[in-house]
Amino acid sequence: MDLLDRLLGHDEATTKALLTACLTLSDEDMDRVFDVGWGSLRGILSHMIRNVEIWTDLMLGRPARIVPGQDSLPDLMRRFDLGYAEFAALARSVEAKDQLNDVWIDVLDRPPTTKTFGGAILHVITHNMHHRAGLLHILRRLGVSGLPDGDLMGWETSMRSASSQPGGRTT
Image 1: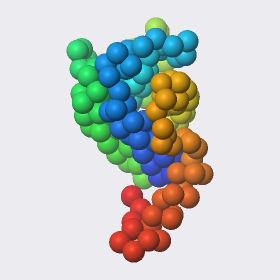
Image 2 (image 1 turned 180 degrees about the horizontal axis):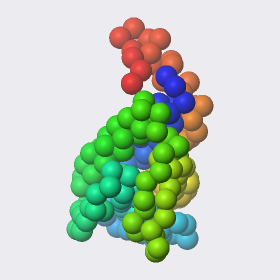
Image 3 (image 1 turned 90 degrees about the horizontal axis):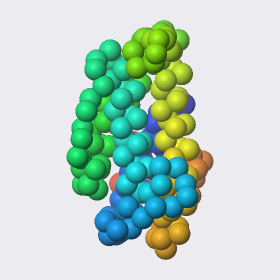
């Protein structure tokens, strides 16, 4: 597993674990406002998922998708699965073609600016990490247990442990 695979794998798995943890919550809990980030679990998750979608669209040179009214937890989970798969495939393709330092035009900036693929990919991953801290904070305040620590080393250790078990594998 290379560095990009570690970053993408951890980002996807940890975000997915937090989305899954939200399945135990009511809509009231999902929308309860806290003094962190985008205010609520739904607000933070919607922001994170929209961010992955938009940056992927921009790097692919297509208009930013619009997905209004798709913020129920099942919709967010579906959007995350689809959007993150596309983002990760793009990131791996860019790396495989040695294009991490190539530039693309961010047409949403005024005026439009150039950005590197590598910088944008890492921005998305670290942006998610930043907001997962807020999600963990809120989930803990709501009394949700069994949450991941959220750190990459813990994730990698659990991946190695799972792959050493009979029938275990790494993704």
